[in-house]
Length: 94
Image (cartoon, helix red, strand yellow):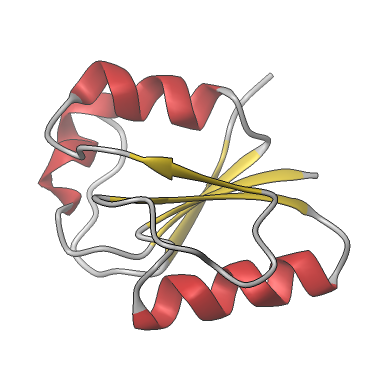
């Protein structure tokens, strides 16, 4: 499964990325900078204020895990979801 971890270089995100990679998933970690993430197949610099860039990152994966605190963006992406805490997981509808 292709998993994108938004906030993948942080304390929670790096652990999520490592665990997912350990379960043989293809992991893309995103962060404001392109720091290294153990287990991630790729690391992507991502500005979470850029809605189109976030949508593109989400659409390239089968699942997305949000671990950063800038989750007000989610209201722009999905009117049906209200997010208030970090570490939430979404599956893209096919």
